[in-house]
Length: 274
Image 1 (cartoon, rainbow, N blue to C red):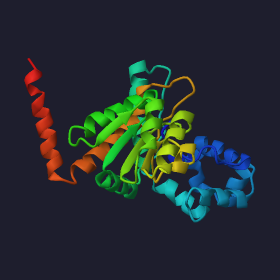
Image 2: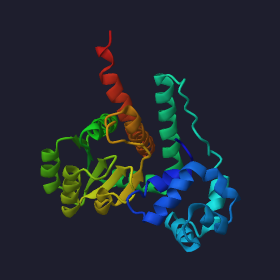
Image 3: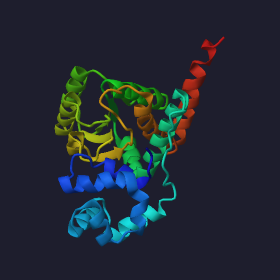
């Protein structure tokens, strides 16, 4: 269910909440728009936690207090609830899920971090896309886009090769690791090795406090709603691909030579069409 920037930001911090904070979250996910009309005392009575806990929770999300938290909800013009009905066909459900994930992803993008990431890509001698499983497919897709404009891009989807490459990286290298959970042991270990070798790291992940972020210079948040048994779904990857496209287009615009290279690589395969 898409519910705007507030819920997207809350989801990005999953795993860091106390029991009382989880009680607040459960209420917000079903009554978010009602909170606009509640004082902190009334909200405290509704959820059954102390006012101090509520204020501390708001500050954890980056707000000065409860009042600012309510203002953000009120100002979130994209706030809406997705009304899936039993009559929705599968194609309609998938479409709504994709739109929902893209809207959530747009809401949590930090443009300053995008600019910082593009600068890191531009300054790197070599850029390596890391991903395993379904995220490995995204890493390969990222490589296929960036390789069209520069030979400094590479990708590894095998954990052994990721670990080996990490051992010989330097401060001039950059790893862009793509992982929804941010907690897959093999890829976290490989990125840790790359960081220890001096490489810079950009993580594209769903959770702000996941293990992968400990070894990342920049964290670009995605908003896919992965479940335990739906790994590999395109809905899960659409947020990753959205971030990759943003990085690619921003990087493409940094140098006119890249646009020329893109045209050259496109022309090089045009003769292979009937």
